[in-house]
Length: 397
Image (cartoon, rainbow, N blue to C red):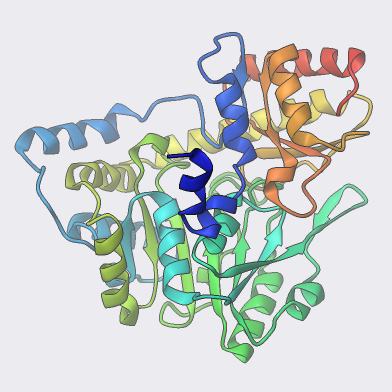
């Protein structure tokens, strides 16, 4: 058949959904050994043996059959222990649901709370994997641009709340934020909580980077909705094993939700994936119970690397940014750039450095580039030198 006829026969949403600029950049540079890849949100170290070995042993024992759709009990119990340690109060395993990565947790939330033409409020710049799934199922992201003023990112809460309409179902708060590193204060979280309670809205929290927080000293974490909310109210938290424990390729995450939502969440997981491999979950439980030293090392490395890239980029004329208080990305403005995707592809080809284009992160993102600094510090320094040289001799698109 004619390719255009085939495309016309699928849904409008699937046909019209734009490519992720991150994937476009990855596809341009992946497999080219001369390119230093800073485009994706992952570190450069493989999963530690202490997490891999239990998964391997489980696999070899024959744990290769269907399992609990909500996740194996030992992992859900480990999730409850982990949260009890870090948030200072008791948590029940019944509030945790294991998913195929944090992305399935987000998909499950959207499928559960937003139907055709419903709206979910999303501060931007934001990871594109929120708005895309909303559009694909016919609901609408209502994007509220953050402000970059006087060298700092700020979320205007009045503007956020003014975006609420009769069709609004939820507000998404990603803190610390991908891509800008903005981290909500406890007072800001309280304001969002109170507004959502008043309006009967869901809070959708993404606290994936809560451990990557650079204020408050060693071992600190970012302020959380778990500090101020009840687990049985309209609160849905998506999370993943990818970042803290260097497990991006494992594709395991979790959703934290009220116990009353257990049956619908279980149904959605069943219909989408029929659960997560049991042997992988065994490795994830080991990470939760025995991974604190590894996480502390990851955070220390990210803190040092943040200082490295801020110092190097701060020396380049025409670059503006806020040193991020959280997460492990630097989102920096490039003077004169109006097409971040075209500029990203040129930097890959001409300088051998892989960034992510700011435009892919939605309104407010054009004119910026994102880099992940949870990488080898020597490679980071080399990437900054290459980019500085490119900026001296090239003009951004």
